[in-house]
Amino acid sequence: MDQHMETAHSNGGYADGAHANGKPITFSITQLAEEFGLTTRAIRFYEDKGLLSPERQGQTRIYHPRDRARLILIVRGKNVGLALSEIKEILSLYDLHDGCETQNRVAIDKFRRRIASLDAQRHEIELQIATLSESCARLEDQLAGQIAQGELAKLMPDAKKRAKSPAAKAAARPARSETSRAATA
Image (cartoon, rainbow, N blue to C red; front, side):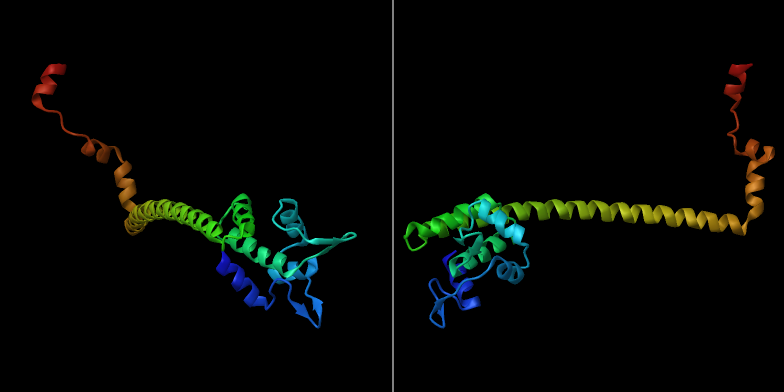
């Protein structure tokens, strides 16, 4: 996660405590929402869940580069399917001051578990695709046979009439053997 923090800072050029023209760099909720393609409501939700803690000036939220970096990690975590509780756990380990060793170990464990889960889902999806493909092939063959029979019937319109006639029905019945006739007599 430490590498992600560095990436977050290098992407925007803002490090913790960075200054532009002698003033600390800050962001409004609207600026962050636009930058990350989020709603302001989503950002407030992350704040309610304890993932972000912007400075307050009255009713106004003031976000610092650290908040922006955390938001980058939140969005990335959500994009790969991590639960907010998992993201919160990873982010909370940043302040242990152990060189992010614990944070990285926990993140790796969560990432590996997510990879295993996705691999299992992929296997299930592949099985479903194979089953559906086989079913499509079988139904397409069946449909082709039905179409061929329909085309044959169009070519031989009298075949249906002959098949329904009493003589055709009698010819279609199996002949009774001598022993079966004797048994019924």
